Image (cartoon, rainbow over all chains, first blue to last red; front, side, top):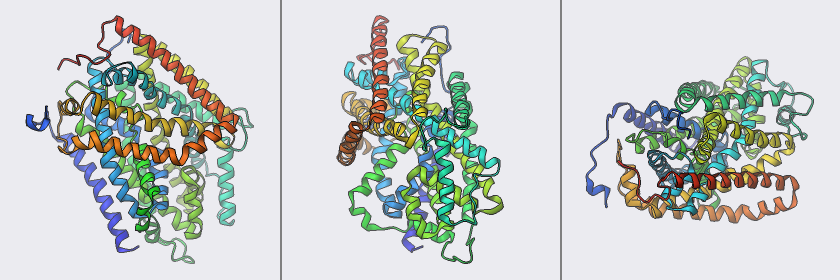
Length: 43
Length: 533
């Protein structure tokens, strides 16, 4: 296994596990909708 | 929908996320992805892969979730009615028929493939499929191949008229379970099932992954065949592959088919959400869950295990065997080499594939059931009967003309591949251009629990359609000529195309009936006013 192979393997794992973990943490802990500035919604 | 029947709705937020994730996670996550990555640059494949995820997969997913929930608020649950609203008229309403045709036609053969997983699971519970490790690797692969050909009916036409009724029995059980779950309804059937099936699938994947990563160097005579080298085979990057357009096309195709976008399922599932349920975080979570199974499990298990037992010399053939070759003929050889635990790991593996398949297949029946209910004004029992009738005709044809898998692979080519591109294009254009990105952006953030980064407005309007169009054009350039020729040359393929067209015609007629009923009821089917917030 080359160093670049390890980098691609580990960074991909960190990305998918991290994103999934963060998403489920938000789903289970955030209550109600967030306040979004009207300007950022456009129109 | 019949007025006396209760309104369908998801019970929980996690329920709808798991249902959409379950729809997306299928055999391709564990079998197709590793083969594609290994053949297209290894670790370097992840660069175009994640680009496609961020620029195509997630944005179309957000659009579908938003359109589905919006349609649900207006009392609509099927792609024709919802796309009629977003596309503001009849053209998009009839293009929406594709959103019912895809899941329905794919279910004709998908449940059959699901039955193979159940069949393999049963065989491994009862001692394996008879691969003798004392024989040469070639003979072992031949034994596994022979078992596969017989179980799946590739050897001769008529899988349910052959010597045994084994495959047909597994299919009947699989089909009955699917229909039972869908008939039970969104919350009591689908949601309840995926709430245990998805965690169970994760546990199975962890068990198999744990076994694979602790294999070490099982054969001292071949010290190079170890886990680290197996991982290297999959992950060592070949940057030269990035200059090949085929790599980018393969990565975009993998993301696209894996996430179930453009399939007609998300738009239907999201229509049963409550009116202020978040769609932004839910859509992202469903995509992330799919990626976890695909990269986090699929990227570590299949190729690594195959390499450890088969070595470099046999890997090229294993990867070229494609999704089914890798899963149903290569891995059984690998399990045979695992000794006492082989049958246990094999049973767990095929049970996991069965769960992956059934959580996808139940999502294929619900869109047509919802469509028949709302277009024809029928109750759940009548609509289910019609859907079951169509599926029986389609599935029996698939199982009767089983030789070489020609019949079902033709449906897979034209419906499960070509039409998915078309529907995704239709959806992103309806959302970003006809409904309007500003209005769509606001709608997506109604009840949102996270905010989509502002630059995604530009991506959803310009980048995603362009990226999709380029990939679709390259795809057609590579495949369409050969596909058309093969249909012209092969009567069996013509039969499969006839089945697709017949089903599409029936759905278009139902849409026409629905259109008249909806207009007569004074519904806003051209999206002139929108729902009341």
